Image (cartoon, rainbow, N blue to C red; front, top):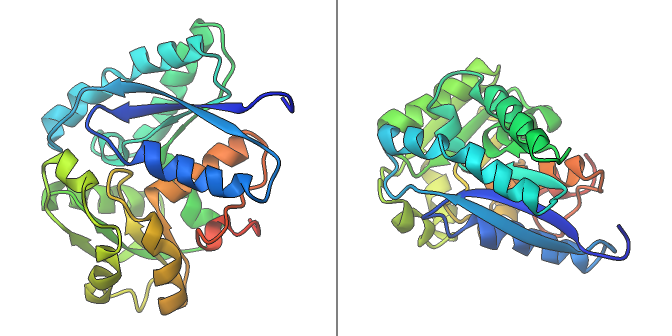
Length: 251
C-alpha cells in the first residue's frame, strides 16, 4: 500500500456536490502531516429533490453503485446520503451496510461499506455523548425522521433546526459559514455535541472548528463523521488538522 494512493469509493446522490469536496479536503489536509495519500472514486444515484419518494428510489440504486466501485478495487465504500438511510426506518443503516457488503463480495471485493447515517450515530458514541442538538437542511417531516432515528439509537436530541430546503443542489450551494450564525438560534445548552450539518450535502467544514472553539463543546457533521469512519475502516489514524474534536487524533 505504501507505493500507491489509498482508493476510497464514494456512493453519492447525483445532485450531491459536497461529499466530493469536503471529504477530499479533509484528507488532503491530513496528507500535510501524515504519509498516506488518497484517491477518490464515485458512483452516483439519481436524486434532485429531497423527498421521501426520490430518496427511496435513489437508495434502490445503491446496489449498482456498490458493484461498480467493487470493480475499481477500492479499499472502502462510503454511502453518503444520511436522510436516504434514516427515512427508510430505524436501524436501516445496518441493513444497508449488510446488503451492500454482500454486493461488493459478489463482485470480488472484501472492502468494508460504511454509511454516513451509521457514521453520525457512531460519532456520538465515540465522543461519549448522550445528547446532541442538530441543524438539518431538510423539510420538517424529514428532519423529524432524522431526530427520531438518532433518538432510537439511544441519543437524546435536545433541540433541532430544519432549514426546509427541498432542492438538493440549493443545499449544496449554501455558504458553510452561515451555520455560525444559525447555531446561535439552536438551544444546545443541554447537548453534549452539536451536529452542525446532519447532511453530507450541506457544506459545513469551514465552520466546524470556528463554532467548536466558540461554543466550547464538540461540533461534528455528517461528512466529518464519515471521514472518521473511512479512516478507521482503513486502519489509519483518524487525524485531520482543524476539523474538530472527533478528528483530533484522540479517538
